[in-house]
Amino acid sequence: MTRTDTLPDTGRATGARRRLRRSLLHLILAVVAALYLSPLLYMLVTSFKNSPDAGSTDPQWIPSPATLDAYRTVLGASDSPVLRWLLNSVLAATAHTLLVLVTATPAAYALARMRFRGRTAVFTAVVATLFVPPMVLLIPNFLIVNEFAWVDSLPAVIVPGAASAFGVFFLRQFFLTLPGELEEAAEIDGANRWQIFVKVVLPLTRPALATLGMLAFLANWNDFLWPLYVLLSPEALTLPAGLANFQNANNIHYDLLMAGAVIASVPVLLLYVVAQRWVIEGVSRSGLKG
Image (cartoon, rainbow, N blue to C red; front, top):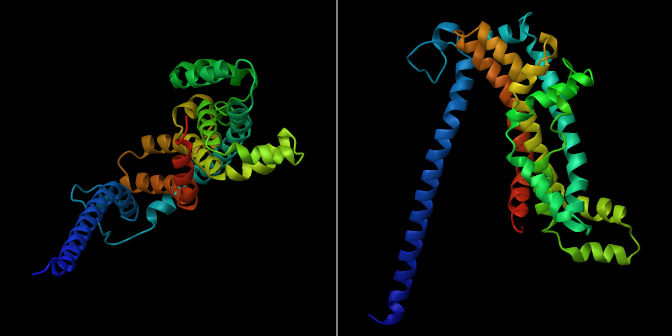
């Protein structure tokens, strides 16, 4: 057999090994994805069961019979206004996200691109606040909120934390990856610093802004402890705090608890599905340069 006769066989063997490795990788990823998704799927399935089946020790992946009674009970409970809690969470998380973006974006740009005395010290101080445990800030934040008469109102869960140190750090890392030649070209064309920021930098920053916006939305949406401190009346509660009270009243009705969990999960899952392309790009680019 000549040397040229062995080349096709070698190429076929290499291709077969490559396909086998790819198939094994896909199989492993499918198993891992199934492990992560199985609790969510079982939560969804349980929400369509009746109360005895939901509390059964024998797990059933297919509800028989499937029913919407849990959703009717959750959404129609007079002492647990779930739809009001859902609206409060949407309003609070959206407003909080906008405040985070408005405050973090110009601060991060200034620390990344503008030269001024003490810039490194300011950035170090901002990053240092990331190491402060959130529990330490509960009492100071409550005193501030109380002084503004925001207790038992949505501003109490919107404004605190809007000046995000993580947001400043995250966006600064992203700004450092942008080529400075674009800003220099705009400056030569006569644009001032504000015009460069708005018309040149911000359009290129959409992936990072989408990522930070989603992280801020999720942080506010999932916040549980702080709303319990500052929101007192049932109508003012956000969804996590309200569902905690709902759970205390229905701790053996697993169909109702799973229906409430599904209602709380669907908005954030939809948000991630819509924004995942920008999130992946924003995370990958923000870590390229320190």
